[in-house]
Amino acid sequence: MDILQLLISGIANGCIYGLLALGFVLIYKASEAVNFAQGDMLMLGAFLGIAFINTDEANLPFLLGITLASIIMGAFGYLLDRFVLRGIFGQPQFAMVILTISLGFLIRFGAGVVWGHNPVSLQTPFSGKMLALGSLSINYVDLIIIVSTIALTSILYFFFAHTRLGIAMQASSQNQMAAYYMGIPVKRINGIVWALSGVVAALAGILFAAKGAISPSIGLLFGIKAFAAAVIGGLGSLPGALVGGLLIGVIEPFAGRYLPLGLSQIAPYAVMLIVLIIRPGGIFSQVKQKKV
Image (cartoon, rainbow, N blue to C red; front, side):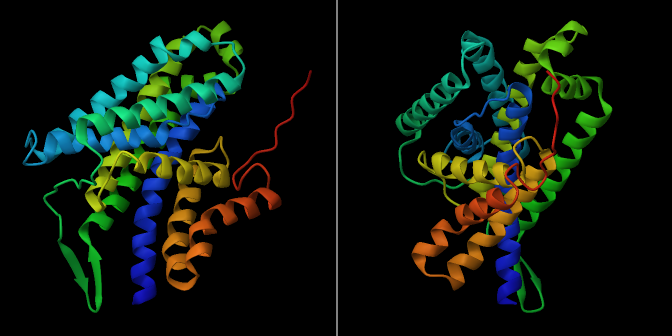
């Protein structure tokens, strides 16, 4: 029962890492750039959800608060691409790295000014409720995180596989120049991808805030772990992001229980190193050949 309890908790945490890693993969597929502010967007989305839902804040209905936080983060992602990121279009990828790292610092500073630096939790209708299965007690929050991740992943899969916009995004991610010549509005597509990444980050942040306390500094930690998950799964693979997140999420509680403190903290990154040594492109990497 103890092992099963750790496994369920690890899967729930891994779902959050996987959702955040999806944001990394979406942006990388669209522009071959890495958004190192993705974890801070999760944190900002979580604080927006808390501001809308908690009784000592706006005290809105739970689903309405989630919807408003997701819309705001989607708009934030779109406007960020429209007015900031397009200004460095054509510059080396290093410029995007520096820009998103700086953006993460700004988001953390702003969140600290507005909400303070003390950890805060999201108030939910299912807080503290447990599902008893014999001697096994499962937190309702963990179940909702797992079910929500499955539902969101299914929606994204259907969107990319069966909608015109999703197919256009895939075409743009594979070859932006060819997509542009075929009439696909590449810049607008990139903006939509950033908006979608913001929505996913907000949902992941709200799910985490429902499970544990959140503070402005948590975004950096989550961002590093989610980036490791994306690298493990393969930075260009949506399924790989989820698998990498689940792998890190499951490893963490078992390492914390059975390994010394120092080793347990580096266990996820040790796994990433092993995967990169064995399969440098990640678990779901695909070998591609380009003709020049």
